[in-house]
Image (cartoon, protein in one colour):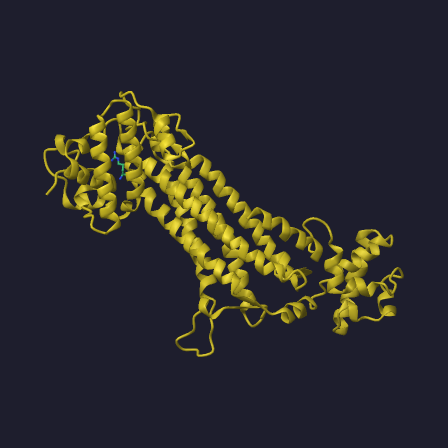
Length: 457
Ligand code: ARG
């Protein structure tokens, strides 16, 4: 059995239970390829600065290439005894190439090494996530494109408020996704800085060139303080916060899909391939995917709190607590990428039931505000108009009719300013068309919003 890389000063071996408790290789092996890339850049710099020989560099490159292949082929043997991904790879490298493998760790610590690995991993995850978000945005746009004239009730307090187009509603989610894309892009700038060279905490006595390593690895700059570089995980927290917000947006959309698919609404149908049945009730088709998205949002929110709590009590600099950053982070990435992947597909598979949307918009006096606005345009102060329309709504409700179904003389009881041009105003189409400014639901405006949005993708 291999002895630990650090066991020189220990009188007895670490207890089995402790080994298992402290090891992270079961989950951090996912960082292997990033660890290898970081090591290659580090070794190249060490050779360029004559800290190791060119021969050593060649050996390290050959060994790491072999290890990369072994991992890809599933032939690499991960050992719990070797604690983590870093020591597993280093040990194998030394077995393959001898002393050069032992020189790789010159001027480096696992503390700056792991911080570098996570940043490389997250940078690549962010790039995937942004691409997936854009893909979902495209699915939203493609659906919206067909529904700028599809009218549904807009809700406040889940009560019918004013008519909006289905496209306008979908475009609200496009905007949320757009801010999510911006947030991930923003987080990426702070992820993309190089900790390597900070060594354990204070820097290193070798004449290293950190900027060279940064350039080789595509980092925008180097972390400016070695203590900070090895100890803070704020970039991971920031990433997880962005992920939690994206999940929260999707959770809200999911809640709406679930409601809309319920027969009480009947606004949409979700393709069968995203639903499941019941083992007892033969008639059931359940919206499992949106329900799970809503549920998994709780899980990602939990990871955010876990990471914040992980950091809050740590003195500078590195503490082993930080090893606990990985599982929440990895699970956040997995949950979000899977959710985004499935969501784009699900949105493309939605059937819209325009008649049901329309008839729902015709209930609940959705154009009452339009009547009030009409009176204001004829000179009545808004508060008086509001009052007059409230009385008209009460009357219509007693008669069991919509405002547009009241006769002109009936309407005129509430204000003599009402003329027969009111009927155009009280239609759903009239209500939409009237909201004709940037951000409004008029078909013309939503078409313009869709056109602007396409350019962002
Ligand atoms: N597995 C460790 C982690 O994930 C690597 C760094 C360990 N450093 C140390 N001094 N024990 O954080």
